[in-house]
Length: 298
Length: 268
Image 1 (cartoon, rainbow over the protein chains, first blue to last red):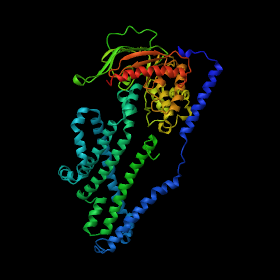
Image 2: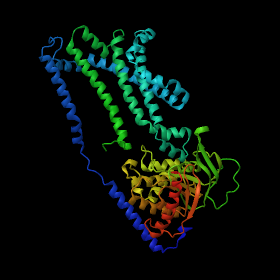
Image 3: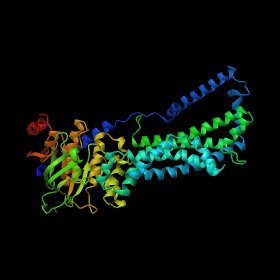
């Protein structure tokens, strides 16, 4: 065999040392490393465009008010609304309403995740189910969830269940679709590598397909949250249960009393909650991307 | 492992891999495509065999058959009790795992107990000069380094639970095809060293003639559509070889002429 070639031991070691040195040198050159920016400047870079956008929105609002398009009691300006907003967010009744709404959101979203994962796992596993229900799930995703409310109210009366029903129908299809897409787009080369390793059946799912579909699953969760939040707000405006106080109830009461400043305050809160939770999903998504090296800004 | 009847009795101690009259067709009826046609080939234990061919010679199909990822339409493939590992043109590392965890997962799949995996992975990474990079993620390494991790992971698949040297077959599907010439050169030296140290049997697929001559004990030329063995070239040169040496160049030129002749038949 050719690799039995007789060679001086010293000469061989020298050649080995040189190879080690050359490999280490090439590694060092290729990794190079780029200077990173410090945390403070990163935070500033994220914050100033957002702050500017808020100021522009407030300015536009003020200009509309100044134009005299509506009476000030119908459309108050930011100067009149922001103190009301502050009064609201420091009152106990307001926080009770937020607590109830968030509780509904949490339960609704949790059930959606459960249903979405179950449906997604079954549909991605069995081709027959895929053919039968694949396009139906996508169809459900595009259906405006408010269209479910008449049926929900007939089935469940004006109850928590009616709201939950519509929230889950709104959010679960997105979550299921995220999971299905993730399983579908597991890179074939990774599947080949996994099979050569001897990963089969459950192990293949546990060590390869589940982790590989994580980014797509998180994207599905993020979209599912957006749908859940929209459905919940529609639900709280339509399904008012007894003397409970939720953000939706506060919003309709403010409209009945023609209290626009209160109403706008609640709308701002609804907007902020939606943004904050979306940002949390965004942060999780970014963390996965940068850990996996999918981040093009890296 | 015998993949089709009749039972393989022909395997002897001097073959690590043996293919007898292997054919592989995809599809059926009018769409039937014959990828491999009656390929017979063997790799001796500790031998380095390079498979050379133009596009469409069924190189990857052949490796998939040897790795038991697919079944031949006809013929037998025998790898005995050898452990089979494979490396691809892409590193195909799992991006959600650290470098070390990638190697550890392969050890786990081979049944190495949990307590030993970390140390064994460390040793394997050391053998490709990456001991200090175990905690990095694949994307933090360069292309050449990732390919070395992939090599370490493939080597992990060749170990026995007791560490004894069973027959080990390493299948390589154009593993250095995506690397720059400088890195590829160094990895040739690295692979040659590891092959010698671990007495691996290697079946190495490439379309780079010089690379085949630089590395192989034997170069097997395949035709395209369907893949057939056209000719085998022994490479009787001492190691270590240089890819730019006159001996390598002259044999490579000879094989290239033969390959071009083969490709030309498809243009007629």
